[in-house]
Image 1 (cartoon, rainbow, N blue to C red):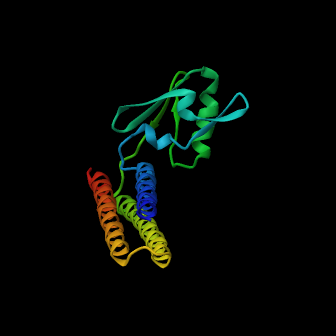
Image 2: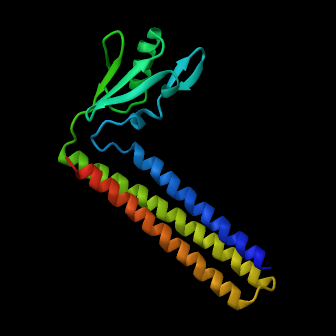
Image 3: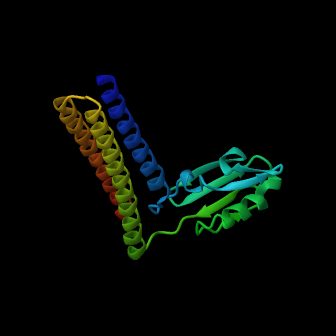
Length: 187
């Protein structure tokens, strides 16, 4: 019977880890005013008839804090890559010199920074909702096990463990969002 409790706790922990991973990915997409190759992660380029991630057809780097440089492996891809970046609607204006595509990242205004902080906080709140959902699912499973003969003491201990997990993952969410907020507000 205790194996089932372990499975419930493990499942809960996996769901919470997935929520943290998702939050980390979402926070990467929130631009902090500094250039980063990750800004172009979602860009797909048509390459020999199939949609391919940009980083699989070119070298994406950041020569300085305000510039992303894209060096296609084939010169013929330059206009295709430019079109893909514009189509991704990221607010970037790519420029090319026939060899390399450069994207200048403009400095963020105070208003834009506040909007990005709000967006980061929203992502954090979404992650916390996922954590609470995982907690509720785990507690519901423990209640079912209680009805099927699990002792009340074991069920209470397991619920306390689920709450401990929820608290520790909640702190991770807060830490990630705080770090992103500092990153955004640093000029």
